[in-house]
Amino acid sequence: MAKYSANDLEGLCNLVDLRHTVDRLIPGRGSEGIERLELALKRRSFSLHRHDTYAIGLTLAGVQTFRYRGLRRYSLPGRCHILHPDEVHDGAPGSEAGFRYRILYLDPALVQEALGGKSLPFVSEPIVAFSARRLTRFRRLWDLDDEIDELGRIDVVDLALEALMAACSRPIEPAVLSMEGLNRARVMIAADPAKCHRLDALERVSQLDRWSLARQFRAAFGTSPSRYRTMRQLDIVRRLILDGIPLVEASLQAGFADQSHMSRQFKKAFGLAPGYWATTMMRAR
Image (cartoon, rainbow, N blue to C red; front, side):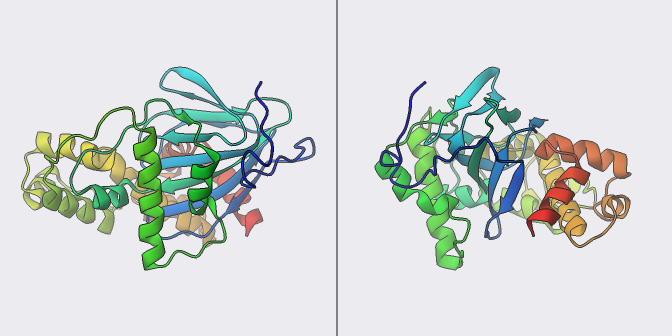
């Protein structure tokens, strides 16, 4: 197994002894469409799940392993992993010592703003070995204490897009997407995700037929309109849980049929049961 020194990683990775670490989650500062976390796992693992954001992570210590696109992957300290929206994956320690990593979750709509209507970049090989110089350039992506103002938001998106393009396995397709109509449909769903919008209403607002809407929505934002709505419902659930609202009430307010339905969707999206997620987040506050 390759070894990496602190000098090789220019201070980005703290190669600590993980024998005494426990599972923990540290939320970082974010912005609309940008979420940053640090996680350490030793005893627990994530079940198979998928989210509608890009996930751009940096392994800090230990061995991180996950299944992605049919193969078992391993990430060592100093390695990045880039996961495309809606791709199913899990996550677990690759050794008894556990592992620690930081991760940026990025709304594809922000990437789309920079792309101007082109299809999203797709990274088929998720483990990426960026140079130490490039890792230093990307440092802000994983800075948990970094305040993100309006200009900072552009900087973070630009750095993330640079990372995606550097790791992209195929050229970006020419602009063929009806972005004005797609954004109207996306905004309509996001404005009231608890409501089940009729398909004909989305067709009218987007000025696209249902088949073009489904196909172009996924190319533009990395997920389907239905899945996008579910994830916005789960955003409501997470916010309500942190406000102390019981799970059953949070489920109903977010438009789920019941708590059981919400819990299934929550675990599919985040790999954790909502109760465990809530306990971990409350402890981190």
